[in-house]
Amino acid sequence: NAGVMQNPRHLVRRRGQEARLRCSPMKGHSHVYWYRQLPEEGLKFMVYLQKENIIDESGMPKERFSAEFPKEGPSILRIQQVVRGDSAAYFCASSPRKNTGVNEQYFGPGTRLTVT
Amino acid sequence: GQQLNQSPQSMFIQEGEDVSMNCTSSSIFNTWLWYKQDPGEGPVLLIALYKAGELTSNGRLTAQFGITRKDSFLNISASIPSDVGIYFCAGMNYGGSQGNLIFGKGTKLSVKP
Image (tube, rainbow over all chains, first blue to last red; front, side, top):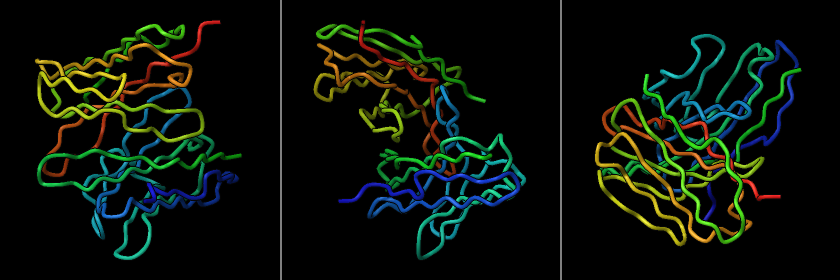
């Protein structure tokens, strides 16, 4: 009964490189959310996806950031041309999104991105 | 946008003490969730609340969804050392294209020296 999987757990990139973060939701979950957490802060919403659809990307920076959740495979958060300010922990959550209104989100262990 | 104020920011506990923390919002939510986060890990869901006035327990943890739908509290009874960590409240308005959680800044629980 695997939970939400994220990899890599730690990622170091130099300024200007690309970062790719992967997330596999819990079995049976079709909704994925990405959040960013800075030290000593709460999590901040970035993007909400279903399979092959971006539902809400209101929290994602307009430039350099993109996300996808293909029909097959994990969800990917992609950061192009990383800058030092992108250093943070990135968390993925998934939910079953039942019609009953129950919408508990379960989080993965996160990817800690460090930009040098 | 919606903001959550979580208090206290930090507190020290002695084993056996009861602990209380709360969150208030500038606007209403239809869902409140409480999470605990240990260093280097992701948040773990503790309690989910879906109705105004709802009081829900999970072992030694009890949480309530405020009647105004703008607040929630979490109580931990008879604390033990493994309760140490950061507790986050999160609110959500579920429906349509909405589904993102809005998080408080956390309450850090530490052991009294």
